[in-house]
Length: 250
Image (cartoon, rainbow, N blue to C red; front, top):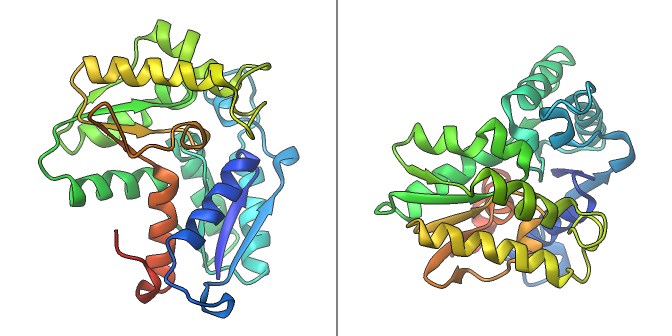
């Protein structure tokens, strides 16, 4: 059974579940893979707030509690649809606490899966752009992973990040976390400004490095820049680990 840590954010959890269904080869209800989603957003502190030092409570502890609930319910493999939660400061604590709890659940790493996917499917690409939360931006989560594989990484300027990209996700009036369905036009406009910047700087691929961003940018290609959705990649990785015969071809 596939387990999903929901609530990080809530719509990101349901998005991952939908993408698991969308990428599964099934002709009947019964042919779909079993999956369980637990969304306990009220218990999990914001990941970016922790990484930028606005809270001392590491969300890893609450995430582990959800993972253990998933395991108790029967999940054998799990994913966390939150890029920022995979920063070393959070993810390493999750792994350590799961080990202490003698957990056997297999937890996939969203960022590693994304980098591996790009290497496998776009071997000639050398310049990769990233749009993300400020927590992911400042922790250099994607930048470090990509640069270790030899890629040139392009990110928005700090001014654009703080004034356009992060507000597209977190703004109290138009941010995706506030207005997820439908997406506020201002949030998409901000993100499209980021996409234009990445293209101008030579990015061949743009990683939508916050699980809220693919809710606003659904195109696979924008003005010649390929968009990469880590949520979809995580969904496919969970299917492959669970039952590779069920994975739809790209």
